[in-house]
Image (cartoon, rainbow, N blue to C red; front, side, top):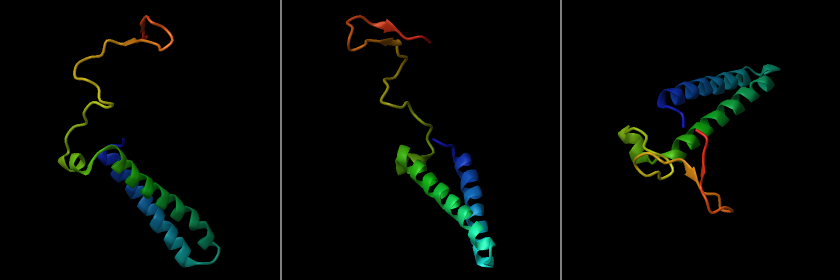
Length: 96
């Protein structure tokens, strides 16, 4: 997940690419074709940012600016680091 400042910086660059590409297309001629790629790239990045933002957190959590909690439903406290493979009955220690 990207931080808020990184998202803003990437969105700014993508918007500038999109506007620059539209400007090249508006000029016309041979530059119109070269303006197509910045438009496509900028639009793809902006859509990806919107999807990435909405994928990991709810709107309520995003608006409250609370810190990110533990992921994957981990219980509070530390984990002991043991792994029990499904093919064995004994546990093994994970390298740390």
